[in-house]
Image (cartoon, rainbow, N blue to C red; front, side, top):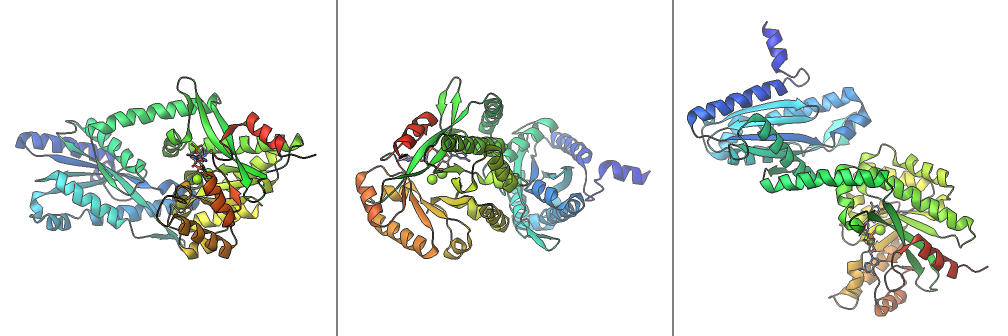
Length: 452
Ligand code: C2E
Ligand code: MG
Ligand code: MG
């Protein structure tokens, strides 16, 4: 009898209360609060960041172990004594219940004298507790959590609304980069609807082939020769016209569709480049932008790349994979391994938006990259900003030391071009020499630069 009840309300994996227990508890808490006339309740919805990847790599047995550790840490972080101490009140004034309500989802109910404040404190200590690395099979993993908080009765008067709104807030915390917490705000509701709408539209765009690639030419600084192009995606939206990537890539990253969009862009860029080569035009490289989300979400990005090369017949030496500096830095050791594998296939690697992240000298040295792309903001400063020229010179010296090539992005003025030339920058990309062009128009440029 007792055992059965334990099972009905407990999660056998972690020993925490389960979803059923959580719903029952919250329902009772709401009723209790009604009797007390006042009294708020905070609901914390907790979702693990990156658990899926760990589970996929390590398998379910280790995944379960990780979940047990997470549960332990969350219990430790939500210990009443500590919270009461942190708030300077007696622990009898606070009630807290921690539950595992789904795969890697947990929820906490807090009743107390000031649940907003308590939620603040609990959320912070939960996040703090997760900072310590997880070690599984002698491998180090970092997992974070995203937390959404809703408060009764302000944000909802029943279990469903409270949970839904905590979930919406959680989603926002995740969208902001994860490992943080967010209180529900009605303004989030609108953005949740918009996000959902965007996802539907992006799926449709993929199915109906509304994406296309523009190609921006890149030139050798000294000789003026065309050396390649960068493929830049555009969305030919049936109503909104040509939508630039700045308006949809981050959404696609958030909902994961970037994986499929990125695959499409890679295949299309390789296919087009091969078509040009087969037509007898001068063979040049094509650079394709990759999002870190692709690296994080894809099991085997390297075989995805090789299969696109095989399918289109493009030689690996004509493909240049661009990843932003910040992206590379965030991807850690695993990311570094993948970069080495990509390099081993014969593909070129470029670090995009260089200068906007925080790479250290030593990390740059260990990086298997071929090229630094100096971010446009530094090019802009060549003739305007303080130390603009000194910064470019420093980057050039660094690149030379490390044996890297340099592409200057966003070159718009003759004077910038002159300065870059004088300082041995190899490649120039920018409106001054060529804007991103539809394939047919880049083809014309290629033709001009092809000599029979
Ligand atoms: P990015 O890779 O740094 O690309 C350079 C951006 O600067 C492009 O904007 C390009 O049109 C713009 N640009 C180039 N020269 C000049 C110039 O002289 N002046 C000015 N003002 N702008 C210049 P775009 O095409 O809007 O792309 C923006 C960003 O979107 C790209 O930055 C890249 O991070 C991302 N992106 C584009 N295509 C893809 C894609 O297929 N996949 C992924 N993941 N991201 C992409
Ligand atoms: Mg780029
Ligand atoms: Mg860039």
